[in-house]
Image (cartoon, rainbow over all chains, first blue to last red; front, side):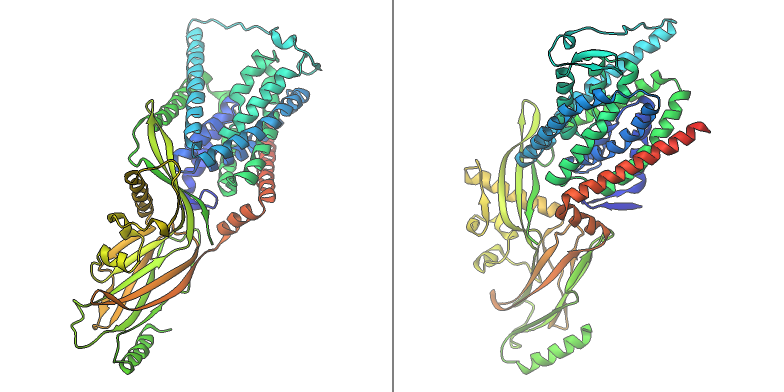
Length: 307
Length: 262
């Protein structure tokens, strides 16, 4: 059974679509990730045009980050003030990102740039996850627990425009969170990701935020970044596919719930190592597509149709 | 109109004007509707022709059917290797090229004939007599003729691989010497808009008669409604997409909360 996607302009199998949404949702629920970093390349592998994959992923992440934020907010783990400051940066970052994106579409380089960005992102994510999970597994075998520093003091505490973030127990400059937000905004608009993978370590290591508040706060700001990115793409690149987004959202929300349940019952490290291998596999496929000589070195794109 | 009655009337007319060659045609469709489940269809083109009875038909007269779809502007990009990476480099913009092109004939029609009579698009790739002026082309930084030809070939090749450009022989069925019928495959990848059917009766390598008519290809259904809404009201479309995401996200969280309590 297949369905026609009106913006992507192709038919896809519904079961395949729901499975992809469900699996990505499951992984994101299990590991507290946005999942956009897997969703976008998988959609591209399916044959969905790059611009549609990016814009629609952003739309899907709005739904999954809302679900996630509510869960953390109920437990009081969202620093709204920090989220707001991050958003100031992401607002301008996503506008710049969509502008860069539409320029790349005109220049015909969007596919290549997205591939290279994804290769870099997925390779680093995959390697970090693989190293980290193998260390945890090794430590568990040796019956050791890893001690982590609670609070970091660094340059973020020395810059001007200092603000008090009561929830995070921080008194730091507003400049670093705005810069981090700005970078996340650009990446979100160009790659169709929420950016949790970059945001969470940045918030812990650059801002020194307590780990418990980081996920909720990053999810909170991702809602607004991806919402803005969705609107910008809908109005400038016309690439948001509502039908595709609908099926992905339904499946990923259900998948995410199952993922959270599974996370409580399963040991994370082995699955995390498996996910790392999947991520590296996707990165390898992207690299091969760039490096292997294509069968058809010419490609066509319709710029304007006369009705 | 019923096919047989139509042909009988036409044949009657043909007998009345028996002095010169004539061409009368019909088609079963004026409009083709494409919806999400459209998997291509066969467009029936039929008609009757009459040529000088003193000459044997088979080797002297031919039918040529040309279907030209709505125009579009396309860009052909060529990938080149930069330090091992295959990246898009040179590009050529072809403006006002047909989004669909079909050329069918009873016998093999030579490129020479097509060029002399200024028919066709597909014939041009095989010849040095390419009428570049007929197309509005933005060559960019592609300078030499040989490289230009590779881009022209690529345009034809990519369109052929999408099944929207075709050149065939022998698909036209001749019945009783003077009636013809052809089913033209319209794949679901065709662009929407106005299509023109040109029919030529060729006798002794000369166009003795020609006839043209138009039909429309239209997209219908909920998918088409969503598509045009997204183009016409992008902001509202974006807001609705967001609203759907927000509602499902919120209800997902709600269901999740209840799930947890159980």
